[in-house]
Amino acid sequence: RTAYLNGQFLPLDEARVPVMDRGFLFADGIYEVAAVLHGRLVDNAGHLARLDRSLAEIGIRNPHTAEEWERLETQLVEKNAVREGLVYIQVTRGVAERDFSFPKGDVAPTVVMFTQEKSIVNNPMAETGARAITVPDLRWKRRDIKSVALLAQVLAKQQAAEAGVAEAFMVEDGVVTEGSSSTVFIVTRAGALVTRPLSHAILPGITRKAVLALAKETSLAFEERLINARELPEAAEAFYTSASAFVMPVVEIDGKALGDGRPGPVARRMRELYFAFAEKSEAS
Ligand code: PLP
Image (cartoon, rainbow, N blue to C red; front, top):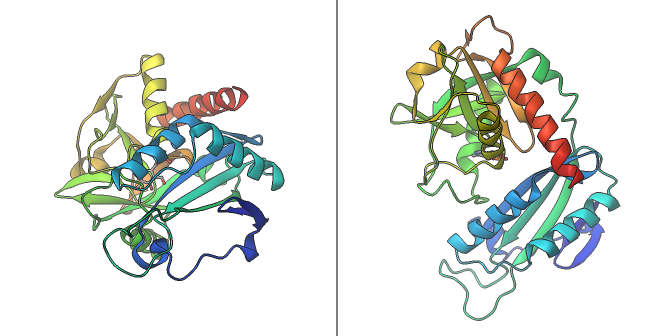
């Protein structure tokens, strides 16, 4: 596998970052993940805009324009011959003597990219539906920034893994924030799509945005409002969205089946619509 590190393409297992990198010492960095479908990046402009915003929010200089990023990502996808999977980008505040405050002078950000192969279209879980549990949201108060400080998400996902389910829905003050690596949607018994409004409390999902636009285009009723954790078992359907899962139907939460325990019609429809959108975006 070929990776990218600070201006160079090199074998992944030869890509090394110094111990004094602030990403390693402080998780002082930002990441981004975009899907690859049929060898092309999906909805990449949105991912690169979010990368730029995340970096600006924590005062790391964006080392590349969107055009440069996309060219590097495309080269990496080609070098790895990825047909289906994802591109991972990480930018940290760079290498400096260990000190909490930002280093003085012009320290170059560390830039790392690699790809992962992953079956997105033929994901058997999308056929049966995923199961989820709820866990307390232990994260910091700026979850709109795609920070590499992911310890709370790691612990949440591990709880899910130990419970034998795919995702952990995080709950704070009785309301659902988001999945450990996804945006949560429910479908009410009245048939409306519901997801939480954007704020500092959640990551502005790029897939979320596309799904809401698709709902609007197809005149599907949707509401952006808080979802009480008590609503989850009563929901007609649920699904989660992310660049790597697209739209994933959820059929069970905390051991309780939703509806008839199979992927619901709205989730399946949104998954199909998102695929059509992704195929279109890869052709542009
Ligand atoms: N929320 C969190 C906490 C995430 O980690 C992710 C993706 O990894 C998402 C939401 C979904 O965002 P996107 O659709 O941009 O992948």
